[in-house]
Amino acid sequence: VQLQASGGGLVQAGGSLRLSCATSGFITTLNTMAWYRQAPGKQRELVASISSVTEGGRTNYADSVKGRFTISRDIAKNAVVLQMNSLKPEDTAVYYCKREAYGMDFWGKGTLVTVSS
Image (spheres, rainbow, N blue to C red):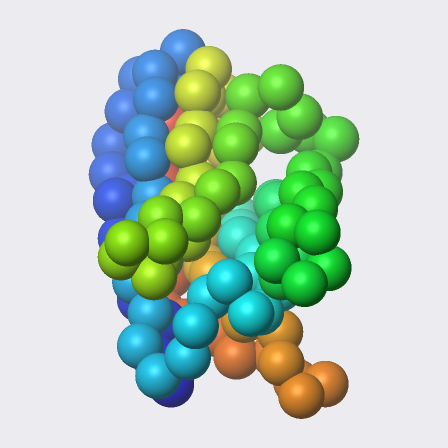
């Protein structure tokens, strides 16, 4: 089981980035998947999640990103995508994707997003 986030980088405030979580060893549609982020000196926090298709594929967002970020699945690539628009400096963090299964959390390596003002 592997998860690898990519797509981070440096962007100006107001810009957009698209993060992708590549996976292997499991089918993302059968799992709840989520994006978290951790800013320097802060705790890791939930950004967005999407439930399994059997649970309706419901999405959930942190208040701070509602209306700006969108989580979705790229079924063809068995990946999970986080489209981030209208980025703000406070969105600067390392972003991680997570799989929830069997009562456990499986984390991938993160990707750094830096938003300049």
